[in-house]
Image (cartoon, rainbow, N blue to C red; front, side, top):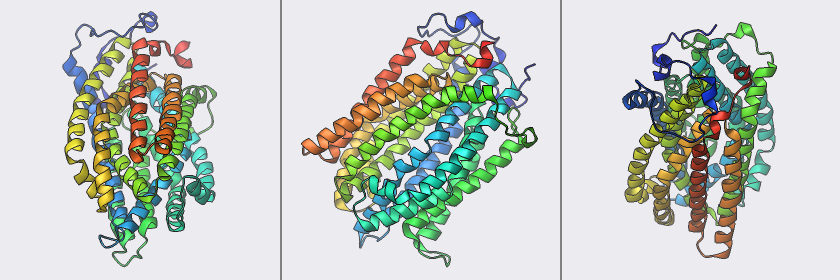
Length: 496
């Protein structure tokens, strides 16, 4: 029999509503805007913000720590030799896509973990939710073990494949990536714990341990990059080691939290980690399309990144700076996408598609307001923000212009993140995989190759391609959501 949730901070408006009728799950595929009787918008906004604000704080501060990380790396060589800082920025940038490519397997499985835990939270079934957690951790452990070894062994070839042409940059990038691979398993397991907690709406715990990890990261950046407190000056390698130390701290704290439990989820080691066919099947049913989506995205991003890297060190360093700043703006969409994923999954678990729709539309509304504010900041202060990374006049001038692209993209990318998050919460990962194939693998790299190689636009051509990708992806994701087909998706245990 389903158990009730004892932790009040995990409760939502859904918990006081009756289970929906099974027949309504596939009826009326069009998205409607009416609220159930007795439910008010204020309550829904409260649920959305309660889940989103810890994620928002966590993601924003995590990205700020990443920005500080990049600023420290970019300051290697100081104002006397900004070119050395540009090389360091390029070295770190060359490792980004290989690292994300290797993270694809457990990132995709985490999509399934969040969606399934959210559904079982909606039903009130603690036993199955905790089984999902154990199965997810088991998969992540073995996947990260294999991938970390592969990443360590093939670090240099991957860096060269990404377009590194200067030996000094290649050596730095290889050192950075190998250290990241040595600490790959803790960050992978932490991400699965985070995905589980978010499925029940517990975003505060991940905020807590990730904030501590960020503080640790920045502190060890200062110690290891520059060689303070008697430590050797490690430059780029020091930045990578500092990141790994911070991630290890997050893993320890997150493990303690999930072992103690939060009122719904609790990792009980005595129950073991033996494979469960049905649970793994459900996870793979959601995770495989998500993995395909991530692989397609990474393939497209690798082609795109190689195209930009071919422009030379200064344009590529500028690109990495602007992408790092843009990633800060991703945090708005991603934080509210956590709310969309969690509340969509829980609503469908209770067979309340009306509530799923209501939550998603209001989440988009909040995200849009924040996106416009961020866009204005980037438009007016773009050059000043870029100059914090590196003082090279060419980087500051070019970066200031690229920041106008970043500003214009804010409303599109935020809406896209939130709607896609809702679709993933519903388990509709196949549609998002197809959309990613069309936009990231076909549109962005193709247009970038044409504009970079056949025109004099240079880096601006690459960002025009990125803008077209974001526009088309936003439209396709919205069309998919408006079709209402996500309402018909079920998991095996619900079908019986």
